[in-house]
Amino acid sequence: MNLISFMSTRMAPILGLLIVKILNREQTYRFADWVTRRIVAKKDSDMIRAVRSNQAVVRGLPFDAPELDDAVFEVIQNSARGYVDWYRATHGGPEAVKASIEIDPKLIDYFEEAQADKRGMVIVGAHMSSFNILLLALGVHGFPIQALSFANVQGGVHVDNAVRRRFGLYLTPISPKSLKEAIRRLKNGGLVMTAVDRPDVGGDELVFFGRKVVLPIGPARLAVATNSRVLTGMIQTVDMNKYRAVAVPPIDPVITGDRDKDVINLAQRYIEVVEEYIRKRPGEWLMFLPIWPDELPSKPVS
Image (tube, rainbow, N blue to C red; front, side):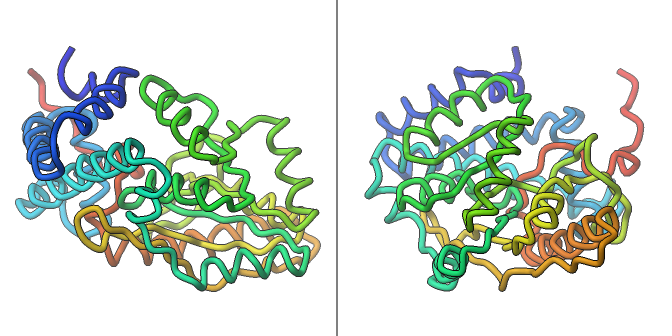
């Protein structure tokens, strides 16, 4: 088993938690950088090719542009260091989580307004920076959010989800049952959260960075069905072990009576906000699946 394969196993997060107990922060960052160099050296791996193709589109560069070498390194390094911070925060407990992230007061205001006026809110985001820190923070702060996770998770994600639940995050894999619960919650003025930046065979075609791609529209369906607002939130890196949760004003769905059209229009509106966040900080977009498969050149024959 190579290093890239190992990083997706159940043992990887267990090893990560063990390492942060043994090494200090500077040492764990050095270890993360060593892991980064090993991973990016495998230029023909599916993961590195996916990151490179995504960064090529986001940065407006051809796949073979030399500048993308640094871009790919930045993405993998941010991911590795983000996991270090997440494991250290997990090891340190709730107070360590709170100390790691600053939550924009406006974000809290948006949550409280949704509850005050009894109108639901769907929170959407992308896999930016150390998004795991944000998930832990939402749980630790006790925000009454139902987080919809992808149903078919594998390897280390099971361990990650167990950690998220331990810190108070109400996490429900997407299923008919969890979606019904989400609808009830939204109709009662509750909060539901999910990510919208990875390929989804059950989604629909949206324009993302000027190109058509099938992305999730489930959040838009929930919002239109319950007349809930959509809040696009994100986590950004401030410094080592310091993050900030930010958001823009919520989007109101436009209800015309043509539900399919209303759903696509709303999904396009929130994906454009996500795009703007990624455009400003492309190196913090930790997406390891090829969003635009057509951008991937054929693999060299070994």
